[in-house]
Image 1 (cartoon, rainbow, N blue to C red):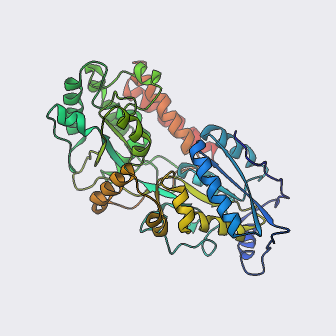
Image 2: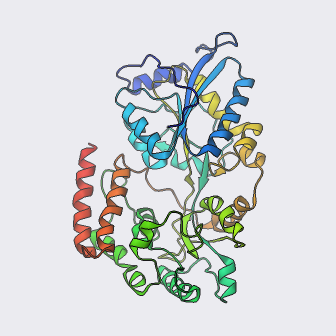
Image 3: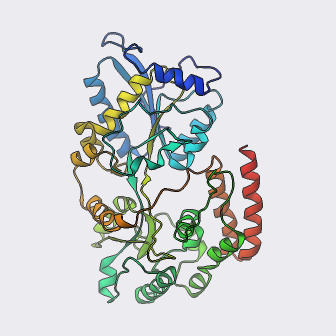
Amino acid sequence: MSIHNPLRRRSLLAGATAAAALGATAACGDDGPSGTAEDPVEIGFEWWGDEARAEATKQAVDLFMAKNEGIKVQINFADYPAYWESLTGRMASRDLPDVFQMDYPRLRQFGATGMLLPLDGVVATDDFRDGVLDTAELDDQLVAVPVGSNMFGLIYRPDWFEEHGITPPEAGYTWEDYGNLVTQVSEALGEGKWGGADWASSYLLMELWLRQQGAAFYADDAASLAFTKEQLVEWWSSTTELVASGAMPPPDVVAEATAPGIAAGVMATELRWDTAMSGYWAAVAESGGRLALAPPPSADPSNLGLHLRPSVQFVIAANSEFPKESAKLIDFMLSDPEAAAILGTNRGIPSTKTGLDSVEIDEASQVVLDYEATVEQYLIEAPVVPPAAAGAIEAKFTEVYGQVQYGEMTPAEAADLFFTEAETLFQSEQ
């Protein structure tokens, strides 16, 4: 873990519950604690990310402290695995930083257990872009604010399509159409390159496919699966022939890959969050290539199943002694023009209007913005916030499907196993 300043250990609020959270909210008023330049209040702020994100965030935090001399921010960052290993290990003792970066699939894990401060009336929300706060509520309470947003799209290589006279897809094409396109492109590119990857391995893409049919991955109470074994068998069978024919890379090639297929120059299309474009752009441009975005395939041409999803979120710990100052930091990071310009699009397309107006939009981000404008008419309500067990369920989904990929199980056998394992994971969260 990369540590800039070790966090000072604060006295903890034992047995924090909803009452504790309300007490913390009350501290946000004018009578709450405040510091001075000589005796500043100290708050902790932690996030995951690479060195580029860390440097930009540190600059924005330094600017915040320069403009708020009564608040000192102790910062701490790590890569994704180490970050979550640390935070989940500290949940039991409630030794959480005042402000920290949240991943949407983990929101319920922290929010439903009283770890997060309700933010209604605590952070400013009037500057957020339409729709981006829809995924920040849990049990009718705002418990997080999105830093950036994204949605699913098909990232593809238009230069390869043009070179081989292949027409890119447009909104309304089906999953079968996409499979045919992948086959066509793979045949045109030749050995060692592919038209697309095995989409059946993705739990998030299955959720998209279900939502396109008016279904869902999780029940409304997030306490069980909302689809059938038959639907899972259909999904896990949808790419079998494509992989067998060589139109998609075999699992051993995928397992050995050291970079995403498009960035490595071996894949023509990828179904990903659209902001992944920024991570691929430089590598593709260096090889003389170009990138573009198209809508994802759909089971229903009139329903793409799309919604704005938070790329990352900021939250405040319920045990924070300084919620007012913590909220001030979040407001500054998201809506101060100078801070927004420093942070840029590192955490996705800015979630606030001020943030979007203040950042320098590079070529990759402009492609994302243009794409999102073209599919805005298809946006639907966001799905239920994932259950606390979502991370484990996603891992189990990938693990079990791996046995299908390597021929160790049929899709039907694997579906039986996954449902049994998922039920166990749900019960462990009760």
